[in-house]
Length: 290
Image 1 (cartoon, rainbow, N blue to C red):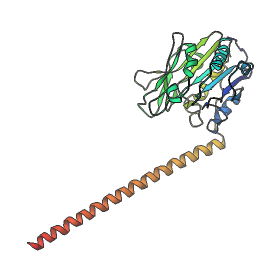
Image 2 (tube, rainbow, N blue to C red):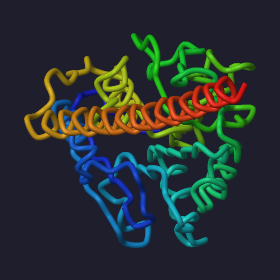
Image 3 (cartoon, rainbow, N blue to C red):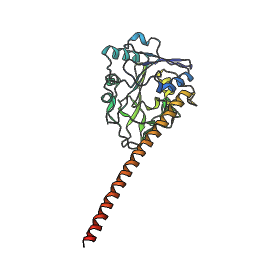
Image 4 (tube, rainbow, N blue to C red):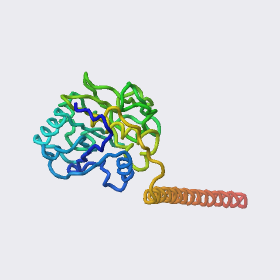
């Protein structure tokens, strides 16, 4: 693995040719782009088939939760060769609220790549016992230095191989499944995450997500020692407006739901009153007849 002793800009390539969810060109991930720029990380995107020539000036390749698209055998060979020769590979695979995880949830073949490095994403979602999945470090590793926890709204566990390092386990889930691993192959490094939550605008500043992302990318690029992370501070006005609108929409939905419940209650009361009036009239009629 090549070692970059100075924190000069590293080059990260985001695959967007397989409907990948995690890419800084998406509005809901704009803070990810800001974070990378703050930490001297250059990034580009490619929709083209993944070939060796695309990786010539690339330190880290990101396959960020692909959807409804399969990697060809030629692409898989190119990715494996890239890693074996010293490249870094970040793999992200999520889950659905319907219980599916990994390739089963995303209709792709990411595990065809992971098996080349002796691990797999599970095809089942991690059962959510609380409002979110809380993952804490489970190993000493440069990626987890100073990280207290990560949070996921949904996730899929990872089946590690013998050489995999369990970086984070979902501690509020029975059995504490592994949700982040790191491993090495040839001269390269691989990091796999069973969920995309930490990368989105409304979560990237929660917990230690921003520090985790930067430390992961620097480790994958072979930078040692990993420099101090410049964390995000205040969201941009655009993102702030988006989040404000989300709050407003949520409040509007709650008010609409409350209005429906009040109407249902009013109808129930009116129906009950009518039935009581009917009973009273019948009782009065019975009294008069006797």
